[in-house]
Image (cartoon, rainbow, N blue to C red; front, side):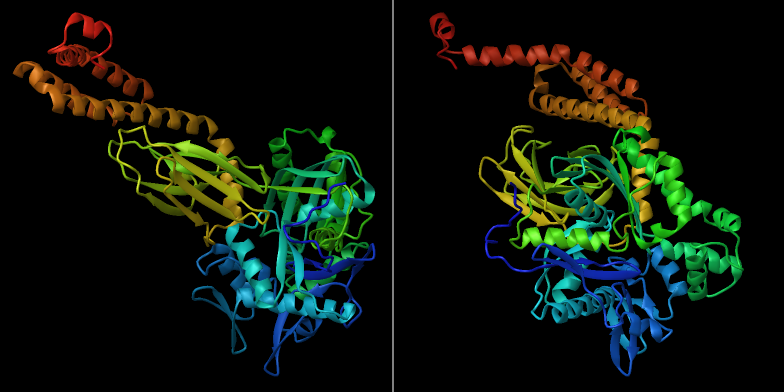
Length: 586
């Protein structure tokens, strides 16, 4: 039996699972072995993720929707800035003005609230419903997020929970939560695809389920693709409001409507369906799997109720997807199971492994990226790698933390920079700097650098870095594949330049120290050789850079021999033959 318990978690207590969705949210819990989704005052389990101001008070859920002027899909704004293209797109459909101070803020009819506060209002409503249902305080929760939420979005979600007095035991990816619900209840084994199409986000993950161990082997997603987009294409086609378009979409799920035939609907939705299929193909390639290797497809999210979605997936995989757990509730159910385990409950044979969606690394000389943690590595994870100094006497080193799949710094995302000071001055290459990358269960990164001789260290927790759009994250993955050959060639070129640069520095140092060993004319020849080599650093052809290195080494051969001979003579001055042979001169 394997229980997941954090340090000190020995007393049994009740924690809830929260599916903080873009369109709707749910809260549920497991008590006495029974899973329950909490219902709202209107008797419905789905709480619209909507806010409005009524008589000076912020209302949430169905009450907000009834005002006809609700702020909806605020999850799309979390962790963003006003400059983001998707935020500007959101503003076009939003009835309220969005501004940008330290965080995005929304003028809710005179009530100026941040995006984090807006999410907090939704969490507070869910918390209140659960407390009324349980007749006890709710203080801890597991909250689900899209697999492709970046650091800023994850941290903002935790901040929103803290505002309402919720201790977040763990953030887990929505597809992973769905796997928990299916895997633990059905004792599923094999390779599964989690297809999660919600109101505003899309996630696709491949999971290996073996003897109760859940391992995410590949994941991809788009936090700007969901059921809301299907509503928009109907609205644009028919010239109707989003609300009317949503009603038409729901009627289409049960047959033709007066407004659209099934064939017209299929044609209209094809571009959006095609985007999800393209990401399916990519994630299977990442996992090195064929369609035939997939044992089952789990459908998650209310938008997967649409027949056109289920039919598209069935055609692609040649098998019917799994839909026997309510797709609206499966994520909340998985979160509740994880909450039960983390709060001291007992679930047999449960182990859950999420993964890093993009590689994490650091900048090395020449603008190259050294990957420390590869993408799709299960988390939590801690990995260390040793680096050294590039120049003689170097006493500080800047650690530039990067995220991405490309080989060069400019093609990756900069996460943070910090400086390790107090390195003892040594010859280049002698210092030993240990850099440790640690990613916790919530996907938050900490980086520590340690100089091993003195024990000097510096560290940083990667703070939210706003502005990276979901499309950019997907584009980074695509670009790594598209430019793989060019990237390798560019890396080889830069490494060749580094070798030449090191050789030039060594030549300059030797020439400066011992040029008096040479005649004036020979000194001029070697000085010219160094200048020619420096010009070689500008070459864009690796072979030409290598040729410059070879020529420099050849030009300095005679001088190197002269330096060795001079050093030998110096060591033998005043020594007899016996002393030299016995090594007493060393």
